[in-house]
Length: 76
Image (cartoon, rainbow, N blue to C red; front, side, top):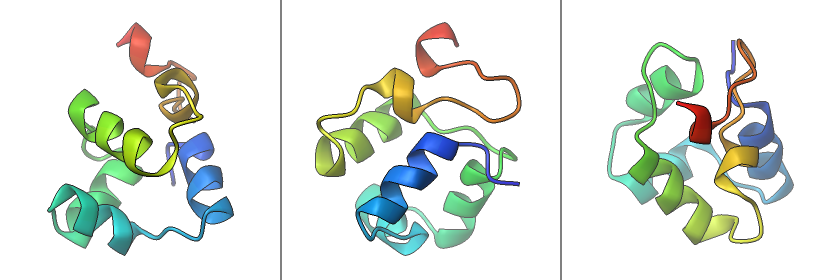
């Protein structure tokens, strides 16, 4: 189950894929999958890199909302 609905929506709107995240963060696609599915956590630094590279108009709070508990990055 994908855990970051707002991030997913922005990725789709902007034609970005998990492979693009993998290339941007220099991590494997399987690691991206683990993070997106909630089996592993994104580091705040990783979210900042994604935001600054592709979604400068979005807040970290918006991008970091999780589907399971609706807690944003600023509350972690």
